[in-house]
Amino acid sequence: MADEKLGVGLIGCGDIAPTHAKALQQTENVKLAACADIVEASAKSLGEEYGVPWTTKVEELLARPEVDLVTIATPAFTHRPLTEQAAAAGKAVLCEKPIAANLEDADGMIAACQKAGVPLATCFPLRYLGAAKWAKELIASGALGEVIEIRLRNMSEKQESYWIGGFSGRTKDDWRKYKDKSGGGVVITNLIHHLDLTRAVTGLEAVRAYCEMGTFATPVEVEDLAVASLRYDNKAIGLVEGSSCYVGRAAEPDVVFLGKKGQIRFGLWDGNAEAYLTEAAAGLPAKEWTRRKFQDATHVEFYDALAAAIKAGGTPPVTGEDGRKALEAVLAIYQAAEKGGPVALPL
Ligand SMILES: NC(=O)c1ccc[n+]([C@@H]2O[C@H](COP(=O)([O-])OP(=O)(O)OC[C@H]3O[C@@H](n4cnc5c(N)ncnc54)[C@H](O)[C@@H]3O)[C@@H](O)[C@H]2O)c1
Image 1 (cartoon, rainbow, N blue to C red):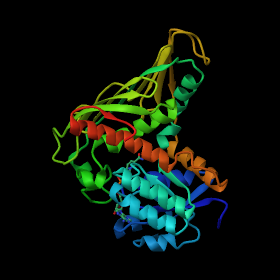
Image 2: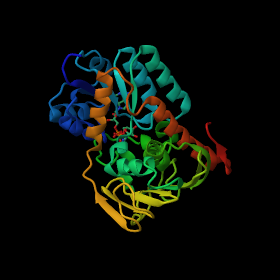
Image 3: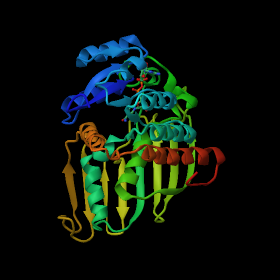
């Protein structure tokens, strides 16, 4: 490694790119080394703002010795070819979620990185939410009791401009509207985070999915409203609800883990969490709500943990296989909606 800090080459300088670049200014183990985008204005503005070399040619970024790890922050349909290219150049790969739009591409990416002997990670920083760590502790210690219900919700109202440039409009492109490019709507775009979080916090895997979904209020091909139910491998049941056309937004928390002896619920974006236990445990009183507010720095923690694992020659904390598992749950939900009946996992 050319430097003590791992160098990141950021491919894709659109909507999510500044989140990566800002986090990389605060990390201990890793720093932004270069960026690339096929749209010159996007590459140039990010490179100039963060003081790193920029290019419109991915191969130029990959040729830089100071780039140890490549972050792929481009639309889903481009993840496989870019991962294969980066792996062939000997770079470790961090791929934005969803790892791909289908399992064949995910498998191809995992195989390419294995063949090249480079680590493949999937970007699920929400595992580093304070609330997620608290939930994991309450479940692992037995304080919550056996998990019997899991509620995952992502209700928002995305404006028309979102579909042609994301939240910031840094790069104008309508890929989010089309299933072959994005993989789908709110389930693969947003709820995939919740589905990964559930695996990380509870260790449970979905074994059956039912779903109803549709495109009700948005001129796009992908779903804007979906309600699914899941059965998990310990028999727990779960609700997965998402919308990108939820006028006025929803008030309820995004995630609830209900156990036989208590529950924990939290929002993914506001740092708020509350837990209730029937018996005092894990430093919490019985039969009272305990509220906590977390100041989260999820991308910073995510990158530091990933860089530490790569430097030590170990496995990334969130692997390509984890990305594939979350994708598989998403695809089971899509298949169930299409079929109008239950779909068993693994697919
Ligand atoms: N983890 C999260 O919380 C989170 C949030 C938003 C988006 N994302 C994911 O990040 C990825 C990018 O999303 P976005 O919203 O930033 O999209 P975007 O369209 O705003 O940006 C993508 C950028 O990639 C560039 N690009 C496309 N093909 C390329 C190629 N072959 N080589 C180099 N550059 C290329 C585009 O020009 C564009 O600037 C998606 O997979 C998305 O799901 C993750």
